[in-house]
Amino acid sequence: MRLSIFVGCFVVAAIAVHFGLAPSGARDSNFFWVILLSLVLSAPLSYVLLRKQRDEMSAQIAPRIERAKQRLEENRTREDHVAP
Image (cartoon, rainbow, N blue to C red; front, side, top):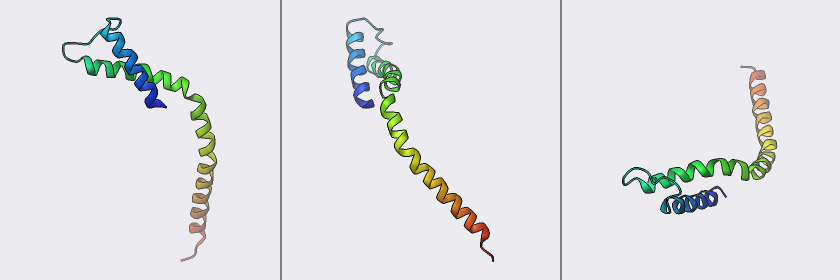
């Protein structure tokens, strides 16, 4: 999804630079300027537009992380109680 947002921003930035709506960069840096402009535009868009997906993924991952932490803690306490 992020890639499609970036590609969309890249197309919009390239069109804006081509028609003079956005600055074209210095000398031969036009392509890199369009990439940089696309990154700057797509970052906040991705943050806002993909919030729902990010929250859903976080909700799926959180229980797994808690179980892993619990197992680590159980292993740590078990090691502490073993007599030499």
